[in-house]
Image 1: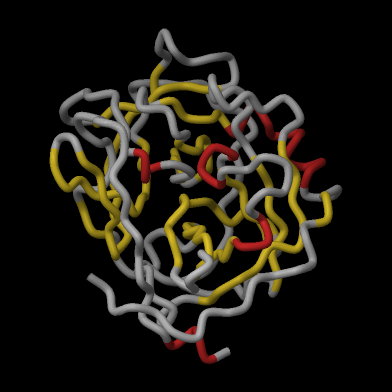
Image 2: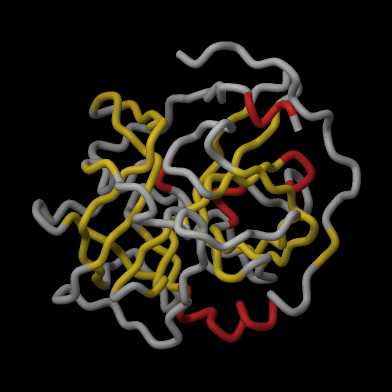
Amino acid sequence: MNYYALVLFIKAATSLPFNLIVSGSTDATTNQFPYHVSMMNQLGDDSLEFLCSGAIIDSTHVVTTASGAQINGIQLTSSIRILSGSNELDFTKATSHQISSYKLHNNYIPKTFENDIVIFEVTPQFTFSGSTNSITVSNNWTADISVDCVISSFAEPISDFQDGISSTLKYENIVTSGCSVATNNSFCIADKTTGKQTTDKNDTGSPVSCNSRLVGLSTSSPNAIVTNVTAFYDWIKEATATTTTAPTTSPQQPTTAPPAT
């Protein structure tokens, strides 16, 4: 489709006054995070707005946080576009996918970020290569501050009280830990060097991996709360086998886009 060749116009919005972010200090190298995808919302004026990140877990499924995808039933699934295969938010360098079905956790609580997880089935399916591949979901993980982990993200700070979106994928070395705001199905992350436990709104859905396995997904909470995907291992297996049909009516593909700013 010709809209793949368009330069992506990112509508970067301001957010709540988060002080610092965990992710975003180092540019990712080519093929470093082939499982990382970006989720975009197609707006009425045909521009695209960054929603969140996610992780490829097999050739047809992506896992992310419900808070990142702003899911309330099927509110946004027909307008979401998933970009894969690139470290850049640019249609000329990424492959675009639509959502054919989804599975939202029945006990998701938006206010507390409990059970903050959703599975999307995509079309066309992913073609695995050096730049596009899945990550194995860990089936046994307990937050451990002694283990080095990494988060990849498109978040980028503008100032101490304003966040933005990076046009290129970045990453940060982190550690995982328990914290007072975490539940049994979540944990907290902290910058390995500074120990800060804060995240940016645009970190939402960003995959957290330890020992090359997916262990978490950053939520929209400013308290660095991460959904512990290992706690949902059985649910993920079931969700990838049984999904809910997404809306069949999709918005018109963008034919024009304002220049990137």
